[in-house]
Image (cartoon, rainbow, N blue to C red):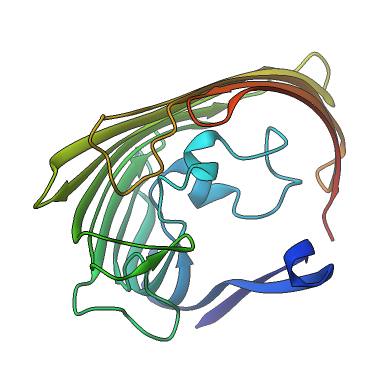
Length: 274
């Protein structure tokens, strides 16, 4: 039996310029046999490589911030429930996650309806440094549920299909992920959203990595659950790794979005792990 806790202390101007505390993961893991485990608690939903690997530690991010698929709230970041997990099975190092838990609009303590979310994810690592994965997420969002600070006006049946390829070798780094989100309501029918990004980096030296990332999100015209903000983003920067627990990043980002127009942003980030 093992336990994992992850808590984030974040500056929050809306809370009177104080630091807010957010409990991100509280997980009890019981090892069934070999590499098969049962996990109970608040998890990061294993929908894609980024959410499954980097969590909240900026020191681990290959770029300064997460891709647009996260900032536009396409993905369910957390699930409170129970999961069955396996990893590094067989020659191709097969892994799986099967999770049942509270759905979108629910809290850690209470569910807003009788429906449960279900996540099924698989991946393989056929060669060193390469990971190929896919996942399926399904949930029912009740009318009247509060999601991202807004009240849902229609009952939504949601299905997410995600695929990813990640390779972080000695010289080259590539991470590509795509999510097809299908939201169905009785009034608008089925509406599809396609969100994707591709990241690439090259290690000039052991410590210096120039990189680029391109993001794109495209919504159907009748979408009512997501904020319909068609967007494209380009990111370019440099990452200097003093050690695996101290990283400096210099980054430029250009974003063109339907609701917010275009923006240019320069960011310097120094991340430290302890």
